[in-house]
Length: 138
Image (cartoon, rainbow, N blue to C red; front, side, top):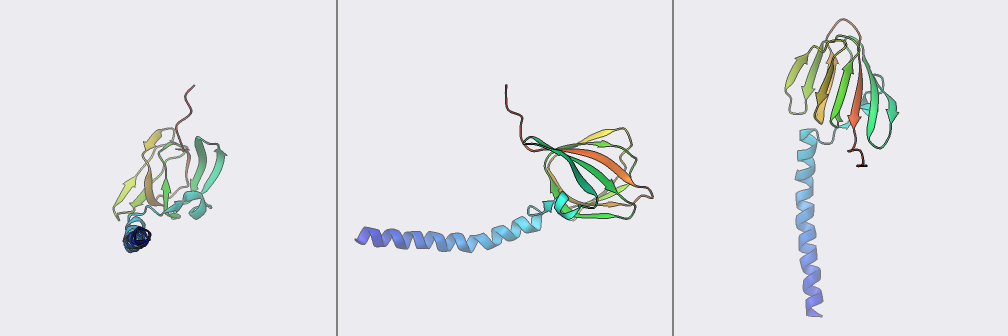
């Protein structure tokens, strides 16, 4: 009987310590942008799903001049640019970078959390293929 009481107290102690740690860990993830939403959820006006299966999701991206796409996350992805663009990218840590993709080129991106603004004077369009998982070996 004494062993059973000790186990309960021990479990309660662990549960209390875990609960105490849960809030700071959640705050850290939120501050780092790890909790950022899917781009289709927050940027539905600019990002449309063209195709999706278990391995990839293909998006058509169309951002008008002055349009902003709120903070969101992408897994690793490949983009093919259908137009020239002038974009301001703001990362979860607050850093910003301006990029000028060129029509007819492609680019790779590791997983990222960012917000995007079209700071150019023309519409920006791209096809973006997000990788969900490795294809099964045959």
